[in-house]
Length: 198
Image (cartoon, rainbow, N blue to C red; front, side, top):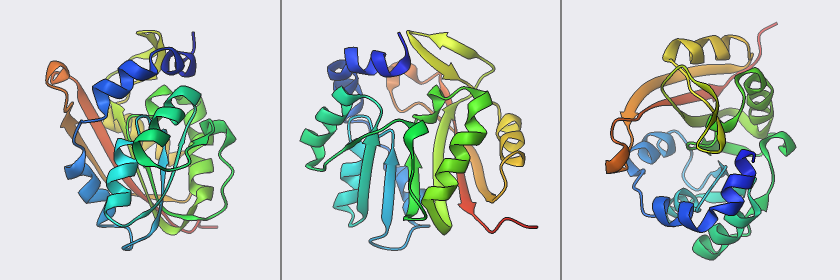
């Protein structure tokens, strides 16, 4: 079973356990860097929880997810048409002022992350903002029926050193907002698309 199969199989359970989590504090940090009403991509939107909050705050939101079942649930929750698309299928050309990838890039193999970051960069307007979060750790492989890549802060700095055209704004740690997983540490990243130097 790959990660998308997992979310198709357990979509209802995942929706119920994540739809009411509050990410407002981190959303605030992201959205204060985006022009009011700006175009934002929710990359791996899951339940649509964050898409809905960004819409309610006046942003022009595009949501996508690789799991067809999650797309269906997110459409009901948000009223948006949610794109059924994997990270590899990303093909936008400088259309978003922000890309929000909360706990979604955790499923990308470390060897493939530079490719995905380049696709994300292409989708961002110049000076556009990327937010993503990953679990802190040293593990890569299958865990709980899904593929996970954990990172340390130093790994993320090395990752961005391989991908031209991003400037790291901040990297910081938070604890999981789910009480039963409070021992899990997340690493949050804010980065800005900048010109590639010759």
